[in-house]
Amino acid sequence: MQSDPLQQLKPLHLPPDPSWWPPAIGWWVLLLVLVILTAWILYRLTKFFRAMRPVRHGKHLLSDLYTSLKLGHISDEDFVHLSNQLIKRVLVPGLGKIKYSKLSGSQWLAELDSISRSNSFSQGAGKVLGNERFTENFSVDCDKLYLALNHLLKCIRP
Image 1 (cartoon, rainbow, N blue to C red):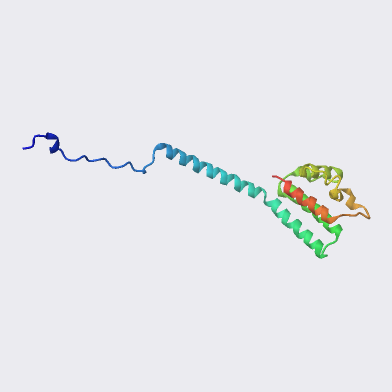
Image 2: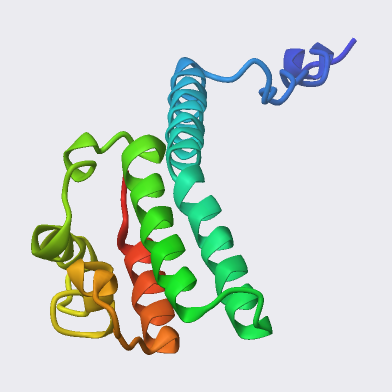
C-alpha cells in the first residue's frame, strides 16, 4: 500500500480549447452591420450608374459627332447644331431637368456656364451655341467647342 494518497489520483484531464464556432454575439452583430453596409453601398452605386447613363451615352455620341466632323461627314455648322441638340437631349429627357427645355440664347449659355463652372460658353468657344449660330456667317473653332462640351458633360451630375 502506498503512503501518499495523491498518487492514486488519475492524471489531469484538460478541457478542450475553445472553438471558433459559433462566434460570440458581437461577431454576429458586426457581420450583420457589414452586410447591411455593403448592400447599401451597392444600391447607391447602382443608382448612381443608372442615373449617369444618359451622360455616358452623351459623351459617346459627342465623340462620334467629333469623329464625323474630322472625317468630313458633317460640316462645322452641323456639328454646332447637333452638339447643341445633344446637350439638350442629355439634360432634358435624359436627366429630367425640364427647366432647360425652353432656354435659348444668352440664358442657355449662362446655364451651361453654371453647369460647367466656367465661362467657356458665354465668353469662349461655346458662345456659338447661343443665337450666334443662326447668323449668316458665324465662325467656330470646333476643337475648342468639343473640349468645352466634353468638360460640360464631365461636370453634369444627376
